[in-house]
Image (cartoon, rainbow, N blue to C red; front, side, top):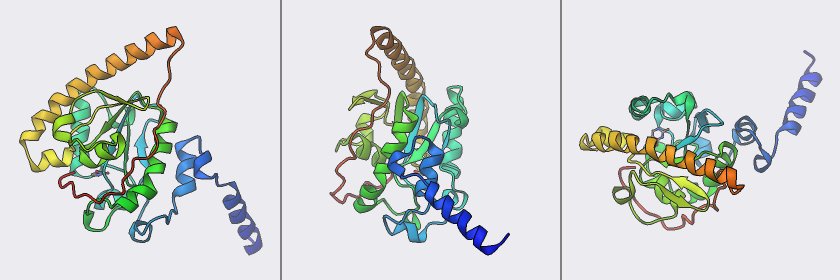
Amino acid sequence: MHRRQLHRMLQLGEDMAVDWRQATTIEELYEAIRDCRRCPLGETRTNLVLGTGDEDADIMFVGEAPGFQEDRQGIPFVGPAGQFLDQLLASIGLRRSQVYIANTLKCRPPDNRDPQPDELKMCTPYLFKQIEIIAPRIICTLGNHATKTLLKTGTGITQLHGKLLHRDGLAYVPLFHPAAALHKPPLKSVLIEDFQRLKEHLEAERTRWERETVSGAASRAEPAEPADVSEPEQMGFF
Ligand code: URA
């Protein structure tokens, strides 16, 4: 192909890229942010890891940030924690292709350190856009970071896990992070029980939604404003 033709094609490609705020599909969002440099993690990542799964999923899982394997493959939860998450999903009759999985941060922090407040501030608007597109019935926050970021709460996962909570028109079920359970085996059975509760919560949400559809009051997910994440905080184990 002639160089000038190629140049024109690339230019057109750029012109066609949608502003991420206008994206109506996950693919459009990905195309709009794949080269993001809003924070320094953009310089060190291999791939931006947006999410995986069904764009019409009823359940969305939100973890912390991509790790080594996720950064390499561009897919969330592909390491050991992801394998455990797959087992937990199977325990309630679900496959990962039937849910949607994402993270609060889209790029891997060096050495898997905790997300920093300025990184969260830059990146969570993308997560809220994802929530708007997926419009899940339930958002499962995995671990303390996702829980505190999305629920705008100082209360930790130990108190909140397994409960169905409503905030700003969204339904949440905080869960321990699967990686935490791999390091602390007693948490495994807690997670297994919480997944059974999640199944019940989903039924309750579906019933509520059907009832409200009949009465004309139904609305699916409407994301809240990004949390104020200005206070640096070490939350330790996810
Ligand atoms: N892998 C992810 O994608 N997110 C996590 O939080 C942990 C592992």
